[in-house]
Each structure stands twice: as structure tokens, then as C-alpha cells.
Length: 299
Length: 272
Image 1 (cartoon, rainbow over the protein chains, first blue to last red):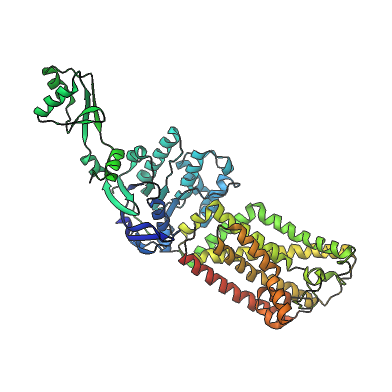
Image 2 (image 1 turned 90 degrees about the vertical axis):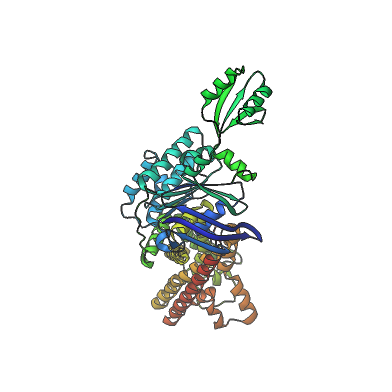
């Protein structure tokens, strides 16, 4: 069963289409990285799923049920734009409000559980406004985790975090999916971080889904190249061409594509009188894939 | 996915949903200073009103009976002086401001997103906010009553009244809290994040100026009782059970109307 299925979702604001026939499929248990430029419709999609925005048309189902179903929506946790906490209230009180809202039985126990997941068990009595940005984001996730949600929707949760904050957030998200079986829809601009955790990707442009791909499938498609420098790159280029290599001059360097064995390449160059001064293996990651997709080069 | 859990979605009943929403609203009400500030304000209003009555100049002598601080002698929409106007109805003016701040904070903090994410049924929000707001205004009515009695005693005016009429007047005002709360909730739903407009509009409607203006044009007619301010004025020191019944019917009908309209708006417009 898919956690989220969206078909032909359209949403406009004053005649401007934010979503234009969007289709989306998020498998249950996935960490779905939702990628797109600013204003491409990521937040609008997430707000539609959460019932904050009323779509012009289209169909949204969550775990096979209409998204307006009270039962399924009670199992959705969200962190969209901001945490939705009252700044003058304590972390505990903010979480308590959400626990009451969800009708949880053992509220204190549940609050302790989610604070532990986000590594904030010692900060429950802190006033929310006194928390750092990283702490606020983690509180937002704790809030979304109350009531053991089946689906977690996170809008740019790692924006503005420092390296440690990002690492911690990454650990938390992996923990959530691994140990709690939660499906996570996460939008972010920080593709390098997303790449480390996502199992699926959806790439949106101008309100349309232009590509949905599993991380495993993308790994299979990822191109590997070796960048190298020699005393005479031009001659080395000719040599490698003659040898049948897929070689290109790109960004001021010599690149040999689709070659896995760098030792063999190095030996071949040496045998022909070219001592490589630099030789480095690269893998085209999510960021390069995204850029090439946006420029129409990738499929 | 191998780590996906088996899911069961139990659809919460109306009472379960409302319990959750009311619970969080009451928790917030009692855990933030707003409610207590307005409770105190309601208790202080009679003192300010009576100071005017005790003073010199135009306002002096506007009361002849201490209970007039609670309600007017008779249901007059055409106001001649502050004595005919300044009574427990003022709770509804300040109540409007309180409700606007209370609901406005939902939007300003973004907490409303949490509520609407987990509550698919928009009527839950309307009903809960109306009931919590009504409760706040009822509390304000009672602190106003206590403040009014203290202020009345301080003025030295006689507490002479028919007990039954007084109870009916107070009961009428308390009952009207529900209607006013639903109106204020509805206004705040329309204007949502335009906090200033909500407060201003609640204030203007709470003062009863539109009804007072209409009375100036059409006269002191009972037809004005169909409005919230009209019925609030109806609850006066000459009230009887009929007045209470009018307040009850009016308040309940408007509460239903505003709640239905508010829910319809929330279903058809973006909530955030």
C-alpha cells in the first residue's frame, strides 16, 4: 500500500497555478525526498495533504483512504514552515497541548518518549522562545511524532541548521523510519543531506512532478567518471579516444566516463608515457542528477 | 518497504474529536495569562463605571440603584446616557477582544496547523473555540458581577431589586455569552491572520453601535431582539422568564448559524 497517492492535484492562488496536475506516489515506509526550486510547489503540496489548503481539483489518498478521513488524518504528523509552538509556553506545555489534542492516554509518558527520540529529554521545562533553531526544529519533530504517526510530513526541517544539527536530524529521521515504521515525506534544498537518508525522490518543477525515482534505481543510473591531469592533456585525450574510452573535456579537466578501474587506467596512461599528476574518481550524486534533470539532460 | 508497520486507522467519534480539541483549548486558556488578565479586567470595569457615576459633571447621578451597574432598568436600545449603556454588556466588548487574541494566537504561532493536520473535521474547531470563548465570557460575567457588587456598595446606592428579575437579567447575560462567542469566533475565522481587523470588528459589534444606530432610525422596537446586542439589552432589571427564553433562543440560533457558516468557510477556503 502507498502512504500517499496524489493524482492530478491542482491548486491556484489568484489565477497563478502553484500545483498544475501533480501526481505523486509515496510508498509506505519510505523516506521520500521531495525536491524542487523555491516556489515549485513543495510546501503547497504538503499543505494540501495536511488539509491546510483546499485543492482546486485532484485526488489525495493516504494509506488508501481519502485525505479528509478523520481516522487517517489523526495519524499524520507535520512540521510545515514553523513548529507551531506557542513561544511563551514551555516545551513541555506545547507538547502537552498536542498530546491532549490527539486524545492520548499516557500523555506524560508519550512526551518523554518523543523528547527522547529527538534527544531533548533534559529540556522539557525550557521556554520555547529560548530554544535554539536546531532545538526548535527538533521540538517540531517531537510534536509531529506524538501519537505514533504513520506519516510524517516535514518541510525543510534541516534548513538553517549547523553541521552537528544536520547530523543529529539525519540520525533522528533514520531512527524514526527504522524503529517506528513511519513513512516520511521530507522536502529540502540540502540535497547532500537528503541523499544520505532518502529511499525515494520526487522532483517537482512549476507545480508538476517531473521525476519520481527510488534511490536504488538512481544509484544504478549514476554515472561514474575519473578526472585526471597529465603533462599533456590533449595528447592523453587522443590516446584514450583511440583506446575506446568515453572521454570528454569538461570544466577545464579531462574526464573519463564509465570506467570503474582507476588502477588500470593509470597503468594504461603510464605505459603510453603519460604520468597522471592527478587522478580522482567521482560519482554523479543527487545534486548533479537534479541539475541535469532541470536542464533537461537527464531522464 | 520492509520496515513498514501494520496500520489500523480508527475513526474517532465526534465526542472524542471534540474532547481533544476542547481539552487543548482549555489547557491553553488556563496555562496562559490572557484569560486571567481579562477576568481581572471584567472585575475592574464596574469600578470604572461607578467612578463615573460618583463623579461630577455629565455622568454624575446616572445610577439610582446599585444593580444598574449590572443591567439597565428596562430594555432600551436608544441610549440617552452612559448609565443606560454601561453595564454587564461591556463584558461582551472585552470578550470580543479576548477571543480575537485567543484565536489570533492560534494563527500567529502556527499552532492552528497542528490542529487542522490532525483534525480533518473543521466543525471541531468552530465548536471548540465557541464553547471555550463562551466559557471565558461567562467567567467574565461572574467577575463583573462580583466587581459590580463591590463597586455598588462603594457608591452607597441602594441594592433594591426584585430578586427574580435580577436572576433573570444575569442569567440572560450569561446565556448571551454563547451567541457572542460564536459571532467572535466566526469573525476571527473570516479574517484569520488579519488580527487587527478581527479585534476592531469584534469591538464595534460588541459595543452594539449598529443596533443602537438602527434603534435611532426605527425606534425602540422589539424586532431588534433578533440581534445579539438586542437580546443582551433585553436581559435587564425588569426581565422575566420570557426574557431568558428570548436570550436562550437567540443565543442558540446564532451559535448554530455562525458555527455552520464558519465550518463551511473552513471547508471551502484555505485555513492557513
